[in-house]
Length: 141
Image (tube, rainbow, N blue to C red; front, top):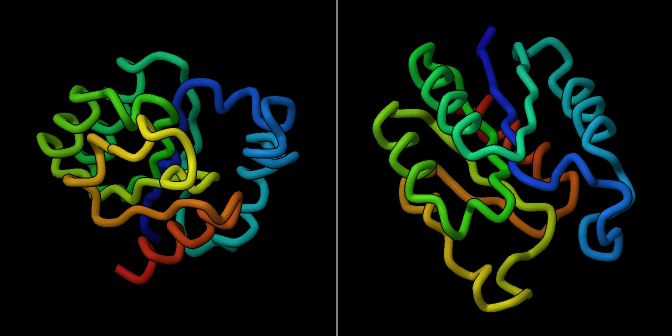
Protein backbone atom coordinates (compact mmCIF):
# COMPACT_ATOMS: atom_id res chain seq x y z
CA UNK A 1 0.00 0.00 0.00
CA UNK A 2 1.54 3.34 -0.99
CA UNK A 3 2.11 6.14 1.53
CA UNK A 4 0.67 9.54 0.65
CA UNK A 5 1.37 12.62 2.73
CA UNK A 6 -1.18 15.42 2.43
CA UNK A 7 0.52 18.64 3.53
CA UNK A 8 -1.36 21.89 4.03
CA UNK A 9 0.17 25.29 4.57
CA UNK A 10 -0.77 28.56 6.21
CA UNK A 11 -4.36 29.56 6.87
CA UNK A 12 -5.80 26.26 5.65
CA UNK A 13 -6.76 25.59 9.27
CA UNK A 14 -9.34 28.37 8.72
CA UNK A 15 -11.18 26.58 5.92
CA UNK A 16 -14.93 26.66 6.37
CA UNK A 17 -14.84 30.16 7.83
CA UNK A 18 -12.18 31.97 5.75
CA UNK A 19 -13.64 33.48 2.58
CA UNK A 20 -16.10 30.64 1.87
CA UNK A 21 -16.98 32.27 -1.46
CA UNK A 22 -13.44 31.49 -2.62
CA UNK A 23 -12.46 28.42 -0.59
CA UNK A 24 -15.83 26.77 0.10
CA UNK A 25 -17.65 25.79 3.27
CA UNK A 26 -15.82 22.56 4.07
CA UNK A 27 -13.28 22.52 6.86
CA UNK A 28 -9.85 20.93 6.52
CA UNK A 29 -11.15 18.07 8.71
CA UNK A 30 -14.00 17.59 6.20
CA UNK A 31 -11.50 17.44 3.33
CA UNK A 32 -9.38 14.93 5.26
CA UNK A 33 -12.40 12.71 5.92
CA UNK A 34 -13.47 12.83 2.25
CA UNK A 35 -9.95 12.02 1.06
CA UNK A 36 -9.58 9.06 3.44
CA UNK A 37 -12.95 7.72 2.24
CA UNK A 38 -11.88 8.14 -1.38
CA UNK A 39 -8.60 6.32 -0.72
CA UNK A 40 -10.66 3.43 0.61
CA UNK A 41 -7.64 1.53 1.92
CA UNK A 42 -5.67 1.95 -1.32
CA UNK A 43 -3.13 4.19 0.43
CA UNK A 44 -1.88 5.01 3.91
CA UNK A 45 -2.65 8.71 4.34
CA UNK A 46 -0.73 11.09 6.60
CA UNK A 47 -2.59 14.40 6.83
CA UNK A 48 -0.91 17.52 8.28
CA UNK A 49 -1.31 21.29 8.42
CA UNK A 50 1.06 24.00 9.61
CA UNK A 51 1.27 27.75 9.42
CA UNK A 52 5.07 27.40 9.62
CA UNK A 53 7.21 27.01 6.52
CA UNK A 54 9.88 24.98 8.32
CA UNK A 55 7.36 22.31 9.33
CA UNK A 56 6.36 21.89 5.69
CA UNK A 57 10.02 21.66 4.62
CA UNK A 58 10.67 18.93 7.22
CA UNK A 59 7.55 16.97 6.24
CA UNK A 60 8.47 17.12 2.53
CA UNK A 61 11.95 15.83 3.35
CA UNK A 62 10.47 13.03 5.45
CA UNK A 63 8.07 12.03 2.66
CA UNK A 64 10.88 12.03 0.11
CA UNK A 65 13.08 9.89 2.36
CA UNK A 66 10.45 7.12 2.56
CA UNK A 67 9.26 7.44 -1.04
CA UNK A 68 5.81 8.71 -0.11
CA UNK A 69 3.81 10.71 -2.61
CA UNK A 70 2.86 14.22 -1.53
CA UNK A 71 -0.29 16.22 -2.08
CA UNK A 72 0.80 19.77 -1.25
CA UNK A 73 -1.43 22.77 -0.74
CA UNK A 74 1.23 25.24 0.31
CA UNK A 75 -1.22 28.15 0.49
CA UNK A 76 0.54 31.50 0.13
CA UNK A 77 3.96 29.79 0.34
CA UNK A 78 3.24 28.54 -3.20
CA UNK A 79 4.12 31.98 -4.51
CA UNK A 80 7.07 32.81 -2.28
CA UNK A 81 8.89 29.80 -0.89
CA UNK A 82 12.19 28.85 -2.44
CA UNK A 83 12.68 26.68 0.67
CA UNK A 84 9.72 24.46 -0.26
CA UNK A 85 10.88 24.26 -3.86
CA UNK A 86 14.36 23.25 -2.75
CA UNK A 87 12.98 20.68 -0.26
CA UNK A 88 10.96 19.01 -3.03
CA UNK A 89 13.90 18.98 -5.40
CA UNK A 90 16.47 17.94 -2.79
CA UNK A 91 14.36 15.15 -1.28
CA UNK A 92 13.27 13.96 -4.73
CA UNK A 93 9.70 14.01 -3.43
CA UNK A 94 6.91 13.24 -5.88
CA UNK A 95 4.56 16.17 -5.34
CA UNK A 96 1.20 17.16 -6.75
CA UNK A 97 0.57 20.85 -6.06
CA UNK A 98 -3.10 21.55 -5.28
CA UNK A 99 -5.25 24.63 -4.84
CA UNK A 100 -8.91 24.88 -3.96
CA UNK A 101 -9.39 28.03 -6.04
CA UNK A 102 -8.28 28.77 -9.58
CA UNK A 103 -5.21 30.83 -8.72
CA UNK A 104 -4.95 32.01 -12.34
CA UNK A 105 -8.34 33.71 -12.10
CA UNK A 106 -7.29 35.64 -8.99
CA UNK A 107 -4.75 38.37 -8.15
CA UNK A 108 -1.71 38.47 -10.41
CA UNK A 109 0.72 37.66 -7.58
CA UNK A 110 -1.00 34.25 -7.29
CA UNK A 111 -0.25 33.37 -10.92
CA UNK A 112 3.36 32.36 -10.17
CA UNK A 113 4.29 29.17 -8.33
CA UNK A 114 7.78 28.44 -7.06
CA UNK A 115 6.66 24.82 -6.58
CA UNK A 116 5.19 24.00 -10.01
CA UNK A 117 8.56 23.58 -11.78
CA UNK A 118 9.54 20.74 -9.40
CA UNK A 119 6.07 19.19 -8.99
CA UNK A 120 4.80 16.27 -11.01
CA UNK A 121 1.63 18.27 -11.68
CA UNK A 122 -0.64 21.08 -10.57
CA UNK A 123 -4.37 20.84 -9.91
CA UNK A 124 -6.29 24.05 -9.19
CA UNK A 125 -9.79 25.40 -9.12
CA UNK A 126 -11.86 22.32 -8.32
CA UNK A 127 -12.44 23.00 -4.63
CA UNK A 128 -12.06 19.89 -2.45
CA UNK A 129 -12.11 17.75 -5.60
CA UNK A 130 -8.58 19.08 -6.27
CA UNK A 131 -7.35 16.82 -3.45
CA UNK A 132 -9.27 13.82 -4.85
CA UNK A 133 -7.79 14.35 -8.31
CA UNK A 134 -4.28 14.57 -6.82
CA UNK A 135 -4.84 11.35 -4.90
CA UNK A 136 -5.92 9.54 -8.05
CA UNK A 137 -2.94 10.91 -9.95
CA UNK A 138 -0.51 9.62 -7.30
CA UNK A 139 -2.21 6.24 -7.15
CA UNK A 140 -2.08 5.92 -10.93
CA UNK A 141 1.69 6.43 -10.78
